[in-house]
Image (cartoon, rainbow, N blue to C red; front, side, top):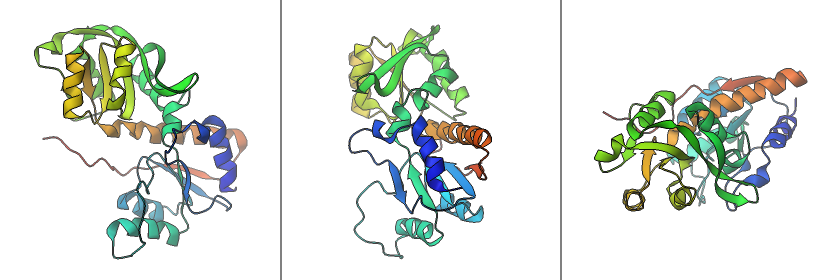
Length: 264
């Protein structure tokens, strides 16, 4: 089948125009006007991902985080980062990026997070267009901050989570929860305005954490890498569409870890 046929079906589910202004989304490397036999779904494109794609003879990668996120001044092969791009081109591996569009779309990444954590009666955290936006705010069964944090740790199979609390508040009860995948600390004021008791998001900045506590908002920081759920869910979607449409293509979920952090 042609790559653009598969991407057209993906875009029917997750329209690229949902992406935030200035976001890097859509086709970034290669062409969609070609036959494909194998599609790989990945969270990031690093040297390990490229090696995996080459080894598995992949024709197209659907990825959440764009491999090219900052302007490139040159394509010198001696540079290790540049080698990632050059190998993709050399092996004719196209790369399609689905970044904030999959965060925003109804039934996308933030809704999958809510399902896993039993967050119900949800609404949008930060509206980007009327009726659409990043993150979700909803309700959980009343529990302590520590209990919810342990659930986050278990559900996402993490070795640790960071709590935004001055310590004694770990036993404080919470019910209304805001969540935003990736680095969402810019939206903590939206969480406050929506009445959240706790905000779950990654990469919370030191001073942002202090400001949150000053305003009475607790936090759970599970890191950025919980977005790896994208891989499993999108691979399942593609397999479902393959079966429905009898596509002659193999769907693969990346098995290499691109999480740069570990906790002792």
